[in-house]
Length: 380
Image 1 (cartoon, helix red, strand yellow):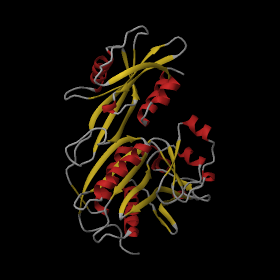
Image 2: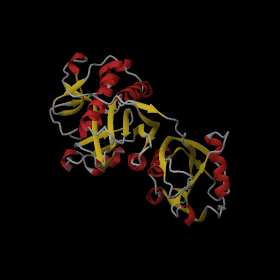
Image 3: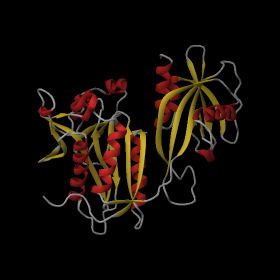
Image 4: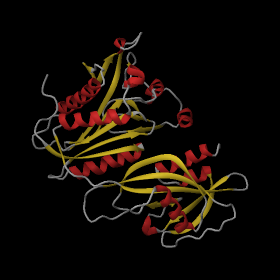
């Protein structure tokens, strides 16, 4: 076998997030690929966790997904076509996704070596927790003979790989199963295989399986080693909150929607705002609702925090380094008859919308997901 991974150190920046909605992850990769395309800039390594999603590679067909669109929508699983290689696969909570955004020009023009290096990363990570995984000829990714761990087992995939290369800039990457919902894999033909299953560290080890964070720590270490990454300092993400401000309407709950002024994007949203130094997210939420609307009410967490790339076309920055933000989501119930007093420098008009209309008007994935969580919170 030819060489695995890289040995000559390459400057890189590591960005590790929690939840990232899949379309936001695509925008993130595109921005980072454009950034590293300029010579002299460090490679980018992103480690994250996606919302439930089926992604279709260039070789996938609609028949690879066995369930209807309505069924998937009801289960909270979205579908996206991508430019990576391969067929259909699943991403979701409990799975580590790693995107190595690398400039392979200048002596590293060897995709096979990168693929083998990424497979080695997952093999070593599995070994750290007592699981023997290996390559399988003609089947990218890493595989486990699961009969060693449970009765009736066979050859099952523990980690998937799918890359895209443009001008020797790599995007997409690997997905390593720690403890995702394996039932979701039954709704597709994963990676085109009908005779092989999918496993996770949890399905193999039970309660002895590591947490996502523990496994991500090991996988991160092996990525740095196998890709010979010389880590450079990186700017921490900014932090913000969203507070879905709602009231009891005549027939259903209503969410306050506000139209941003043109210089701030000109889209509809509920309350959002940046955290100030020393603030806790709850403090920011109360302050922003008061400043933007003049309202106050009962704040509840939505148990959602997600990260995204900040588009410099929306927020201007003094340099070309990509910026990221992590948003924590809340809901706030206000009195049905409370008057709204907009901050005119931020929003030009407002309206109260039912849940369906509010979700339709929201521009970003995180905002739409927050409405869905509020719906669940209200038992709607």
